[in-house]
Image (cartoon, rainbow, N blue to C red):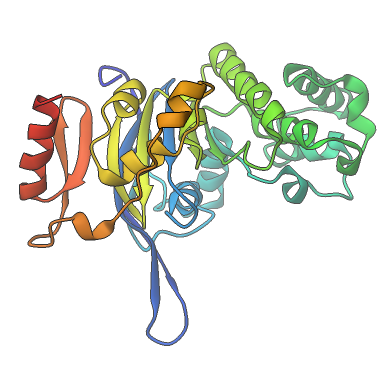
Length: 312
């Protein structure tokens, strides 16, 4: 991937929230990573890890406390004019976690999907508007007739497909998928993920895929970053992270994944993450422990992790 075009650069990004007198919540506290054109970068972690706040800060739903977000080399948070923001919003879109709350219940599916077309003046008349929406519905596995209905008339999986169609309407390059399957039944999750993979191949899309389910993230992602308490603690290619986890927090997440193998399940040992195991003699840094595999650790931990890798 490194030989390809760097589409997104996140550099020491911080997003802190005020929580009453003299109290600050460091939701994102110095996160850095790149996303390359055409790849899916997975961001995984438990609730409260800061992964969704990272996604929302990247797309400017939140203003960054500090740090930089560059898209195609341009500073995202430095864009001030309405024209600049519109141009950026057309390139980057978001699919939200809960399709029920992200779709206006008083609008028809036609108007929900066409909202971006209207804002960016991408259609000349009502006929073209209707045709574009109907094609988008077909692209996400729904029917033309669904355009006249309201969100409450659809299942959760269908509503998420409407959300995907809305994101695709302005023909973006980059889509942030903010836990797009967590509110869906397990039987529907794979359908939605397969749809996202199909659309990526057809349209040359780039994804930031945010989730707490590491098994599903592995299935869709080229590379994965693991977040814990506002920090990125490990980053590697998907298979590498899955087979050679280094950070104790990553190991705990992987140990929680069930497999359809009774023998494995009988012997599976759940690892509980204990933050007290870490060296506190210095501030941890993000270090490359082997090519394309990064871990947040101190110098002492770095040497320890390297020995563990050598003895595998």
